[in-house]
Every structure is written in C-alpha cells, then in structure tokens.
Amino acid sequence: MSRFAAPFGVRRGGGRGHAGSAAVVRAVWRIPRGVVVGAVAVMLVGVGARADAAADTGLGEPTVGDAVINSGQDVIVGITRNVVFPVTVTGSDDSGLSFVDVDLKGPHGGFYTTDAFCETATACTTSFTVNAHPAPGSDDPVDLANANAGTWSVDALVDANDGDSVFAPGVGSFGLKRAARVTVNASPEPVAKGARITVTGKLVRANWDTYRYAGYAGRAVKLQFRPKDSSTYTTIATVNTNSTGTLHTTVKAVQDGYWRWHFTGTTTTGPATASGDYVEVRP
Image (cartoon, rainbow, N blue to C red; front, side, top):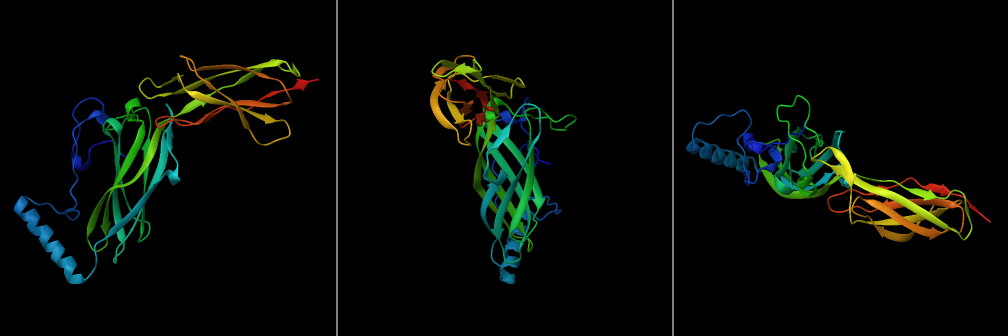
C-alpha cells in the first residue's frame, strides 16, 4: 500500500503530512536489508566491502530506464473514492532486478512512497492509492490538499539480485489533478428552424480541502454540436465560465442534433465533457 510519508522513517512534524517544506535527501547507496550497523565507520566499511565484492563478480551496476505512471495517463482524483494506479520502473542488471522503492513528489511537499518486488528481471511495478480523504483507521491519516495538484516527479531506488542498488531521481513525471464535471442544457426543445437555442451549463471541480465540488470560474469551455446522424462533434463557440462556474450562450437552430460542453482541463484540473443534449429542429 502506498504511504504519504517521508522516506526512511522521517516524519513531517504536525498537521497534514504533505505540508512539510524541508527537503529530504535520499542516499544513493543502501545497506543490505536486515543488517543493523551501530557506527558510521562500520557503515562505510560495509559499503566498501560490498563494492569490492561486486567488482570481484565482474557484474555491472544496475541501470534504470524510465517509469510509466498510470499507463501514461494523468491521475484524476475526486473527493470520495480511492484512485489506484500503477508505476512501472524498467531497467537492467546482469543479475536481474529484484526490488524497487518508488517515491512520488509533488507541489507543496506532496509525497507518497511504496515498494515492491520486481515481476521480471527488467521491470518492477508498484501500486499507489490516493484520495482526497484520509484513509479510515490509518496510522498515517494524510490526505491531498488543493495545493498538491499539478506535476509530480518520480524517484526510484532499484535493487539487483547481486545486492547492488542504483538511485534514479526524476525518472518520470505525471499530472495529479482535481476531477472536473460539466453539465449542459439546451432549450427550447423542440425549436423552430432559424430560432435561437439557449445553451447553459456549469463547470465544477473537486475541492480537496472541503471535500466538495465547487464552481470553476474564469475557464474557457467549448460548446460543441453533433448532427443527429453523425458521430463527430464540432466546436461551435468558446465561452468563459462566470464567477460561479456557470456557462451561458445562444446559437441558431439549424438541424437536429446534440449539444454539449467540453472542458480540456488545466495543469491542476482534469478534463470534463457533458453528455449531449438532443434538440429537435422543426421546419
């Protein structure tokens, strides 16, 4: 399970765990799992011995290729449901990859981390679960805040079967965005050909701070039309939402068909498209 917490047992102090501002530096090397060392000098000797052992085997260091997050799609989060998505890190080593730690880092201290055994010698897939709400009964009940929306980066620490490790910062990136919704209503229905049709609607987006959807003001939204016997929508006009997220415009009635609003999204908010509202046009 993914955890929204600082790596290596470091916790941010007080309040929401994603709000910490102190930078956390991960070590490029790692002590083998299960080993406890009592002094820095012993740690350094252990690292040197491990490097010598790797050199004796003639095996090369592991390498990391890239990371694919959510099959290349943005991660869109609403206000109530868990959103689960995979992160696959690929790489190579003469002995094969064995284990991966993955950190997700976002705006304003956003942080998730998890780990997993590799499913093949060249690919390791972890699974993350995010939500606007804290998980019930969680030992680390941290939720997303609006300030965390935007572009997130991926760091990966990969272990090989021969004990070598490699740390790859910024191996991938993705958008973690607030979910949006848009409605549409076209009237009158039916309408005489050549008359005016009034098309209204409202664009809202998830507020991760209040756990509600609220109007998204000042956003350009496309009004699109699809003729009755067609499968293709065409943009007719672009309208900006008002201070409450409301949309309003009028168009001329030409033929039977479906009207909808389409919002393409922003760097912090996902796209939204209304279901088409059918209007019959009579001679």
